Image 1: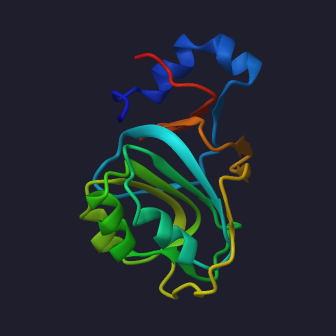
Image 2: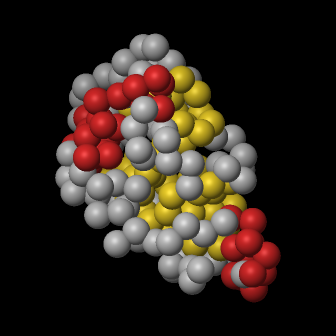
Length: 168
């Protein structure tokens, strides 16, 4: 079940103790905003790949159930690891959002989808199709360690990672 929208700035103000303990972390502001859903949240599923989008597509073909896919693409700027078709599928399968530490393509198509997408940039070249990567492993993105099962909250102010679901 997707969480109610939670303003990231208000969440930070109201949870200073969680910030102090490291249970609530803000990602560095390096991501561009894509997709029609600018505010989204949900439990995190992690994936680590490099210039390969096979596992990204496989995840997004599953039922999302309000989850957020966090993909560490190694911050590669040499190709896109997410395009319009998988994003459309993610929207249809009930994913709340997708965070890509790397590039996307088909920006106009993605911007037409009712899903939240964050990525470093867009790139016209497509990824390789080798199927190499690691699922459900801790990833390090934008200065923060992110683990499978944590919660992500995103809006136009930024992205927060919480060890547990925050109350509104």
